[in-house]
Amino acid sequence: MDYVSLCKNFFEATNILISLTKDGNSLYSSLGEMLSFSSDYHRDLFDISLAQNPCFCGDSPDIEYGRIHVENTGYDIFLGPCFNIPVTDQIVRQFMRELSLPIRFHEQFSEILCSVPRISHVQFAHYLLFFHQLLNHKEGRIETLLSQDESLIQKNESRQLRNSLSAQEEGTAGNTYYFELELYQLIKEGDPEKLKRFLHADRLALQEGKMAQTPLRHSKNIFISTAVKAGILGAIPGGCDVEKTYLLVDYYIQECERLQTIDEIHQLQYVMIMDFCRRSGISQIPEGISRDVYQCMSYIRSHTNESISVEDAAAHVNRSSSYMMKHFKSELGIHMGAYMMRCKLEEAKSLLTHSEKSLAEISSYLCFSSQSYFQNVFKKQYGITPSQYRQKTKLIPSGTAPAGVKK
Image 1: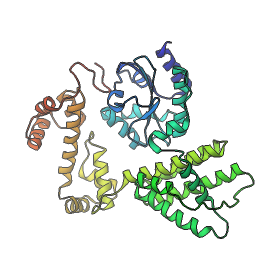
Image 2 (image 1 turned 120 degrees about the vertical axis):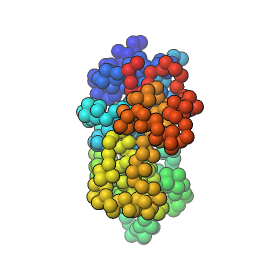
Image 3 (image 1 turned 60 degrees about the vertical axis):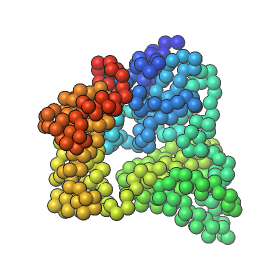
Image 4 (image 1 turned 90 degrees about the horizontal axis):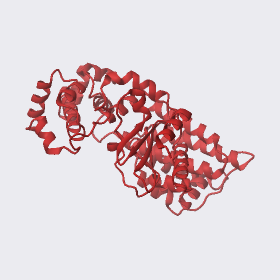
């Protein structure tokens, strides 16, 4: 089979980004083809075992990746990035940081990523299973694939969640009320393992009240109610971005309306609850840190490859620079300017270790005024030069193309 042709035709038909490798070497990338440079980013993002095929890969809940290994060959197909919410400027910047791309590519990247169709986690799983069946002639199960990261479709969890959230009849409403309070509190706390234990616990099954004329419509109405409350009572108080949470709620509801079986609705409901919980965990504000300072820290960390100022970071949280500098120093014990420099230098360490970018390229990418200035502040902070640090920690063999850069 001509795998390159297969990937090209798939991209032309769906506009879903796809890449192909053989023995770890890039053969084709729809993204690289559009941008006219090599796309070896899969090497760092997808360094995973073949314990399960196909599989999900990547760390961000906003950016979806998947891998299908063609058995008995060295070929791997990677799907992604895909998104289940509209692509925001924050997502574009996050993706560019993963590829270590300069900010000058921002407009071009934004246009490409916004053209990628939105698909849910479950839809994405079905694409992976489709390729697995096509290439390996094996029919996978959606439950098995989704169970990689969610322990999905545990019978007791599904029964408990379904029954508890849908109980409406007199005599069971009190139990449902306390169950829901605990459920949304756990979503807010952002601990997925704790939430799984709660859902898996053996509790008294509650009776379902009638919320529609048909069982399917009843299940969809239960899902809609759960989605709204999981977002408003769990995710947003847990620190998730308000706009993004509402977008996710809307998208999950739209995805639910597409489904035609009750089991599929229960599967999606579990995925949704765990997704909100995981996002809350990522958004948790450390103890002793105010929301203003935390948001300011996040803004600085996400703009290490731009020339931002203290005034820019303060304006992001609608505060004056004097207010933010005072509270930043009080809560973190470090000046905002020093924190900005520290974030740039930590990013430089990662690039020195994991990429082949030259010192000049790293200096330019992180917006240092000159390479010599970059080298001086790096040595002052860590006691060794950037070149010495690279020799000490280098992981990529010489001659390998850098991530996202043409050789």
